[in-house]
Image (cartoon, rainbow, N blue to C red; front, side):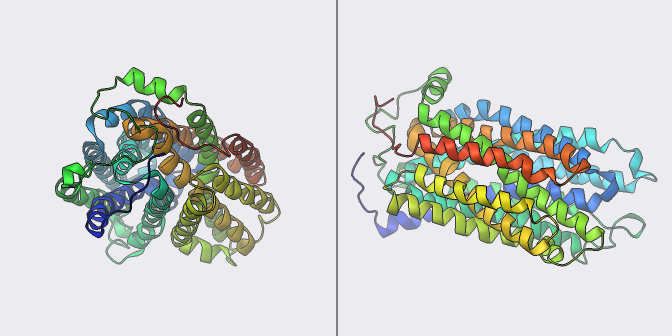
Length: 449
């Protein structure tokens, strides 16, 4: 691994200007992705749990498949072009979802509208553009952060994710509850389409900002490029690599393949708690049970934001400071805690405060793990040359897991919520066992795999 030379304050300032607006753009992509969950609650009987599961499942399946295209593409065109394509495309699709929602609610009988079909198509295209976010942000920052400081970047990456979740759940809900939306729809109803139009407008705004601020590498911002100590060390970064070579590099790398398996489990667990806890709380409140549930429902996005900050920074600091930039032990510690909490969920389904506490701790663990593995391990083991392809493969598996839980829990929870934690538990155990396999893994220079 190359020696880490501390950066100048001017470099760190320019790096902040580079990643911070890109981080906000990434958070806004999350807002324009998970606002579907808020819209499901707002639309009521127009979108059942099973229909939501189908729409979200279709979207996540497309998300998984799109990574195999967009990862290598961003490795070739660069992260700046990638994030611009993602922001513009997702903005247009959220605009489309908003306008279609407005059209449905203007109908004399909205139940006649083919919401499941149309939402699946538009949301699916939205999820194609969403894939540009993670691959682009990792591609850019692979050039700006040394391996020894990437645990810290894991914290940054997790905060971005958590901020996007906060925007999607809490801010979107506050938009729907605002006087500009309440009662401003057709026939005295609510103008629910703003849950989609709001992120669209913000994404268009940051698309313009990023054109001027974002640079792919330090050299393009007037600073000297440096050896970041990842698996591209010793390679000619200007040498063109074919898509086939990129895939061969990633798909024959034992650590990346193991991380992909772990992140499949993460996808099941993250969304299996993050989305379905909110839906379960909403059902409890509708049944007249409010103790614990009402607080959690009203503040779920904020709680996830706090969980993300705690989890991602804990994972990153433990990894860099305690485990010498090894990612396995830090993620394994979090997976172990998460397994115990899922067991606790099974015994807490009738207690709003207890279940919220378990869901909160699980969110700390799962967001911390996801940021560390998808945001940091991909840079380490993919290297600067293949960082986007690596995160594409790994994040693709996250959303393959997300698709599995979406279809499965949409079916299971319609019949019996008791099987919700039972479904989640095996994935937590499998993820922990896989982490034991990469406990000592660290990036090697060229020729190491």
